Image (cartoon, rainbow, N blue to C red; front, side):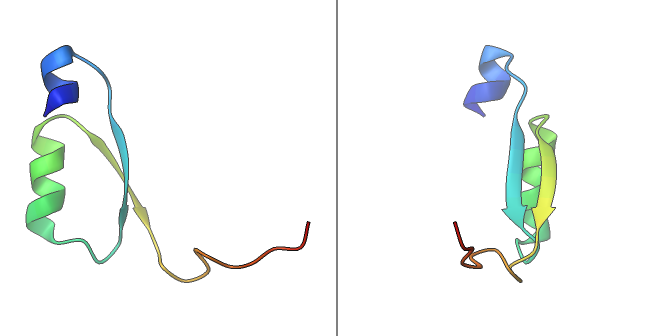
Length: 47
């Protein structure tokens, strides 16, 4: 809501299991939503 009031563009990364109500509320404020799967999200990588 703060981003919408200030006129900022907002991109949100949300888990794919987020509720539809939450996704709709964020989209109603003009946010672009990116769905992220939990599979491999915290996969440890060698440096």
